[in-house]
Image 1: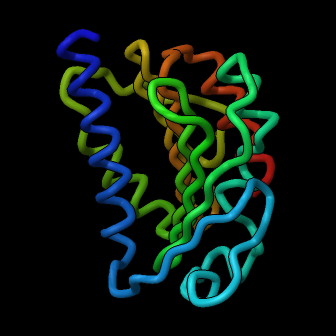
Image 2 (image 1 turned 90 degrees about the vertical axis):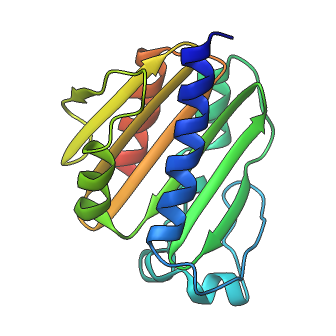
Length: 176
């Protein structure tokens, strides 16, 4: 893995972590659930977006979608929810798909779009949500978009294919 690829992976992971913190980290509740299931208990209570619309990150990108993107079945997604943010991860490093859904919408999109990942060129994309951008540096492909009040980030690790990432993001936008 090249230095640029390493920096991109670190930057994407940091961006996802920052997104979760930005939307509020006052709650410490979290949960894990299989793909397609809804969180219950404290975590579901703290998830404003998921509770109001019943949409979770694991519903935006399904196990079948992740399988097509990775070329193999990664197994069910691991879901987490905290402070209105829903996340879902399919597979394990080095080949995995990570999905992040936040109720911060355009504000979070603008913040992430204004902070390009070091070593990667951000590309604006048409036809995904209200607005979308991506960064594609093999072995990582990342797309972020917003639609209505939702901000979504999808990262494919292990394959920097723009085409596969666009398919996932388009499917996710259609499910919002």
